Length: 291
Ligand code: SAM
Image (cartoon, rainbow, N blue to C red; front, side, top):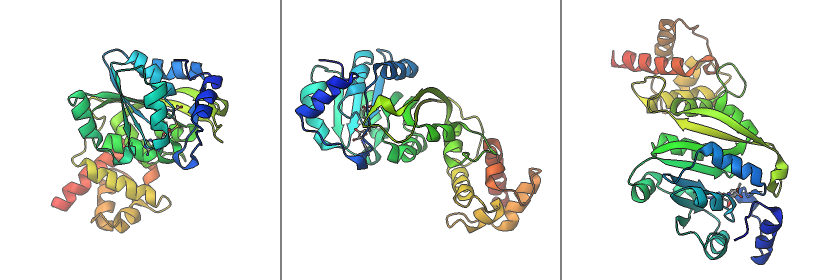
């Protein structure tokens, strides 16, 4: 089977199947062998690994993964791509399972349980950009057993995952990622490495899951509720945004008291707080509520 990382081979497959790109599925296929090699290398794939690939497209990266990994599970939403993968580009591999489904509807915990006995998997993908954040949040917040996530995303989103407090890109995604994993941007990828070309620059980011989270919080869900409230209304003070959040029950006075206890100004905004401080605020609010 000819490698699909070369544009002529990708074009030949697309023509053979009269494939029409679906914009709504964020289809930008990789056509650069150096980038493909780089992703596989940075993901550190070995013959021990089971890899979950989200959105295999015509199977370009999947071929590389099948060569290196023990087993690959590839979940693709577009049913027009399934015959290409099954009958053509991945036909020669017996270590791949192709699932035609929406990744956000798949019970990933169950999938990893069934396919890998619940042992951690490596996630590798050139993600559809329209759902990057929900996919990453779902992977971490549902505690899917994961060793690492190495993914192509918009450069701007990769930046958001990496930054700390006090910058404009800092938000709920930064905090969620940094609570669960160590983020490292490992490659910058220009639009001409894709077909069709996206409008924006892309980056490959590797998120290595922590064995133990870097901060201790007594109620993780509560902390993320507070974080979401803080960034939903970014320009408001923390007191106001937490008090007005429909799913939180803390009073303004409780928030003010917790902030005072931390040595923070009462009028502080959420964007000024680090992960450590959000954890401390959560622990203090829970203690205050218990009385
Ligand atoms: N991996 C291929 C490559 O690098 O050439 C394709 C990457 S393309 C950016 C994203 C892929 O994700 C497309 O094949 C698209 O159909 C698929 N996709 C989009 N939304 C999806 C979803 N909700 N669940 C599973 N796959 C999805």
